[in-house]
Length: 335
Image (cartoon, rainbow, N blue to C red; front, side):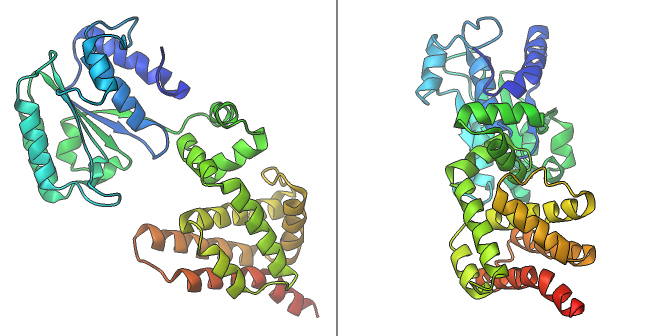
């Protein structure tokens, strides 16, 4: 038996120490970026807290409580989340949570509620939760999962114990990805790069054929440079893909261009065609132009994160035209 992911072993040792002292907090915030396994850890913790006969600091997996949790039918454990992705946690849901928490446990010694993502609460919901945290039930544990703890009310943070889940070590994540997905080290490294170091996001990228998308995008960029395709044609193909993935990949690619121009090293570009294009563009474009291109991609990412609903076709056409301009302007200057 072990924690859901190897990089969580250290924090699980802390959990065991807290449990042994009998000082398990009534409110816990699992804080960290998306894709590091906080939700899986929350469920693992709930199983441990509800287990009737823990074995060596882990849930036994065989008692009545563990079996009920395995069947997702334990009456003393509930999960509260937005009804739809991207939506808010409403005050009515928090009122349901409050009612659940104060009732006497039916099966064990305590009740556990998991709330995620905690920052999805609107103002009324957050204030309703605060009342429960101010007067916690002795036999209840509330686990809040947060990808952005800074967005929570300071009064909520102050009434909970915050457990941090940073990005795991890059080498550890790479080895884990290689084993899980049967990838080469360079492929795992690329997925982690695009996922900004979050292993579970890297798995999601692989499941969404990110490696194949990378290859096709490289081919499209090469076609643009050879004038075999127009920005309009390439943008029409790209807008059918995940825009977040497209923009993050472009950002990473542009950062690699800047790094190569400064150092002459292409450590994160693993295929020959990609290296050749990297050398060609970096040799043509000025550092100023490359940084301007990177800044425009970063601006597009911020627009997307702010839910500004940009016109995807026009946005991609603009970026691809700027990509062409990296070499076109320099060519005009040299003639």
